[in-house]
Length: 141
Ligand SMILES: Nc1nc2c(ncn2[C@@H]2O[C@H](COP(=O)(O)OP(=O)(O)O)[C@@H](O)[C@H]2O)c(=O)[nH]1
Ligand SMILES: [Mg+2]
Image (cartoon, rainbow, N blue to C red):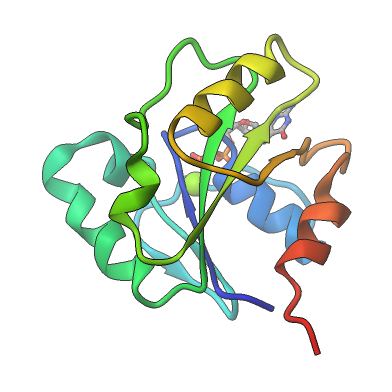
């Protein structure tokens, strides 16, 4: 699998998506540190929210093949500035989480504004969209 760094505000669904992608039981765990598993790198939401902690994400992006920016369908705002993907020298994809909720199209529009060309819609609880995302993250050949 391509090494994938999950980035987004706390509660957006990074850890739950990690569990869904690994086929684990879904259960809540607060992410307190960079969680570097075999191919998924899970980050605490605070690293994306607090300016001084953002450097950790930049450093871990160098270890990843893909950086995934997550926004939830029920988010009222986006953490990610327009065209932020040009700051990362890795492929950056967008993931809309909790798609059963309010406004998945608005979340996708924010991700595209930030520069994500590829955007996935998933719900980790129902499993919708998770297989398509996992197939994309599989290494070819
Ligand atoms: N309905 C729904 N709830 C989700 C989804 N992903 C996460 N959640 C819930 O949102 C809360 C925060 O999820 P978590 O994965 O810990 O967020 P993180 O802080 O980004 O790691 C938990 O109560 C999850 O069960 C999703 O795709 N759909
Ligand atoms: Mg987490």
